[in-house]
Image 1 (cartoon, rainbow, N blue to C red):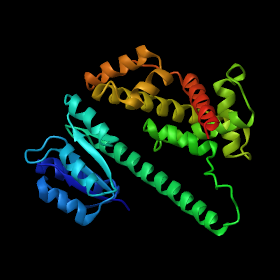
Image 2: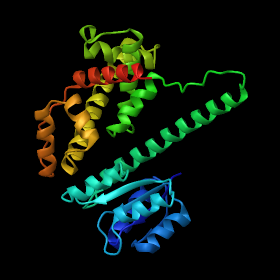
Image 3: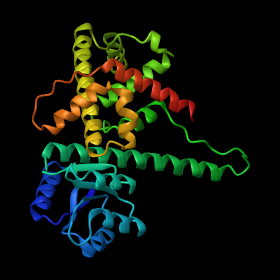
Image 4: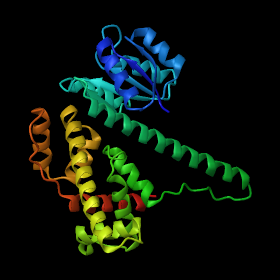
Length: 303
């Protein structure tokens, strides 16, 4: 279970976040306060997994607190609570290592989605650390070997890192994406040979459960189609949100034009600015999967 510390000078905001965390079973809030030097000492004393911290506070702003906590070797994750029009300060937050943002006014759905992504990233980082410790142990047990032990990265590991970068690791369709790339790798397909989406969905379904009958297979193909479409739309929304906060964000600059058509990204950004407007953007699932496959191939070559 993850532990959280909430730092915000607005007591109503703190209480809302605490209720969302507890009601959604996301973990336990071990500390909640208005910040300042007391806030810094409370984080160091409780050592939470995640600190939710307001960007703008009267005594010490969120960036100042993060800088001091980092200098004092706090190892937890930071989630910045901000208003979308503070773009310059948000850009500075990225430079300090902040990867996750919650926008004000507080929205239950956004908080749950962001904190689930934080949880997924922490779990992935811990798994990687465990692999590294295991490999280091093997290296110590083999003192006669002159060759260093190389860290092994599977196709699924690489896909998960990419999906984590664009905030998709907690989405239901993320597993289907990883399996799709594994299938394409196994078949050594080029983009010219890329299968139709229906054929690819069928391959994913069979890999998940080879014993399905025809009726079950057709149902699963439709379910996969829906999961992937929702996941790709979520990726577009995540990247468009990053672009609104900071147009020069490296994740936005790299992935937005790579995975989506520029006009679709701009349209989604406009929709987010108009909060509540009905989405008119249609996502291209095939292009997304093709790019994901190519990105994974490139990262494999870099190993």
